[in-house]
Length: 81
Image (tube, rainbow, N blue to C red):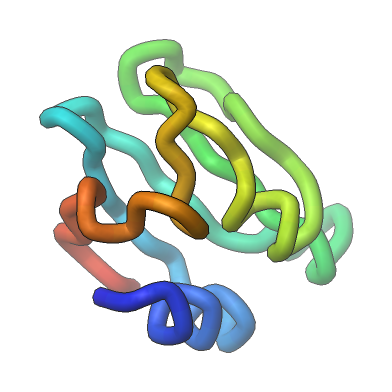
């Protein structure tokens, strides 16, 4: 998936399960709170590690300064719901 596809799926309100170095995450928009904001759920921590706008989500840095905007090819997208 490229960055424009990811952005399009999120703007459509899709839920996405993905991983980075076999670490599982989930992301979507905050439907009940603010549909213009998004979140990333960390499966290991069982909590949100990010909440913010779409542009902020795409720029959010995971460990080792990895982000969707710079390193989309390092992510594995398992499911788009």
